[in-house]
Image 1 (spheres, rainbow, N blue to C red):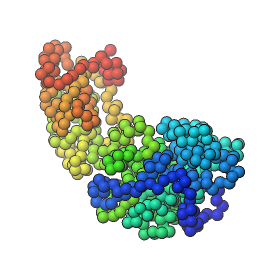
Image 2 (cartoon, rainbow, N blue to C red):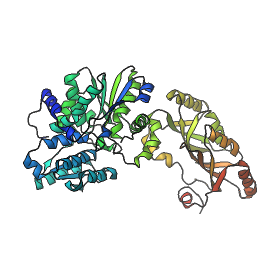
Image 3 (cartoon, rainbow, N blue to C red):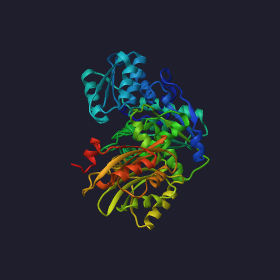
Image 4 (tube, one colour):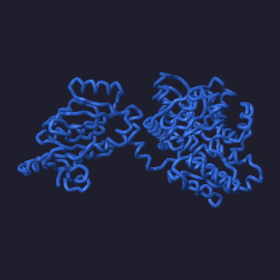
Length: 516
């Protein structure tokens, strides 16, 4: 930020109206999310910045800033640090202007964004990957700028960048004039600052709500401190907003024109990615789904209806492999799934008794492991058709039956790691054998499987995860005495399920088996 005297709101308004962004960017669609609108009882509109040539809004600010440079500055070249989307905007702008750009990107930047920078910039762009965070990349960019006399194009803390992003507000007010509340994602704050200063000059009654990831809430921290402060760390799931400290100018504008700041969790972001996909068939990146995550949360917490709520799909440059995580967590974010741990007695038939207590609720995950001669530990996931009320009824039944349980639905460590690590080697010797079963997947299929399996054999290990496929896959361990081989094999044949033994599998032996 090099501006010595802060611009007035009127000066920002003029900059936004005169920004030449349409030489490179498009006036993206503002669509009604019909499915989500019906579910929430409000009209939800979404600004489709994924339609930009670089699949994010960042092109607007980068191009506007470069367009203000002198001929001498353009000839010398430009430089920027970016976690991804600003870099792509820079690359596209440099190619459009036929000037050289150096892009410094953290080493943790998803490959899809690095490759896109190369593709958009071509011969006009040099990529330098440095450090593991935006701050480290920025320090490197500043050093190269001083060494080679390159003009730094900031990703957010610059009046021309802010004005470029503010052109989105101009379009939205024209496309959907009924808007009464607008939700805007915040990383460094350029998007929120540009939109807020524009909207509040023309439609001061429109409420502006800034939205941050709970893992990188730098605006919230700045609001509490009265000035930008550095966060000790930031999460990288929503990498597009993973900024430790917001800009001075973006904070000044947000502090003045933003009405409210709220945060959303990773689970809520995953649910929003699914919401956007269900309505548009577009896969938003995590940062791009922040506003929709906030809309769902805001309507639930404030019980609002009949409103016109706007959000911005600000980017769709998602790393494909991130979808595994999104799929795993979206129903937790929607409040349609819960996970918990429970201790059950270690005795024949207790596993089946516990499952019967769950009633007709749809089980989505079941991790069971023998813990001692007296008890077993179980990690359970359940699908909730009626939300938290149904979960409260279930846990009340568990407590009444004397089970010791613990809610893990908001435990990040449990959901990210522990759910897949509930096993371990048994503390006492058991004659364990492990089998994999396949059975047709349908509501109640797991209970049918357990009823068919029967309560004759002591189960020592159980892992099942419902993935919505046609076949369910279950891994089961049994404590089998040496003299029951014939009876057990006969029982397996009577079950009618496809099965295979995995006792000799090296992964099982290494992590879970107690065999020498």
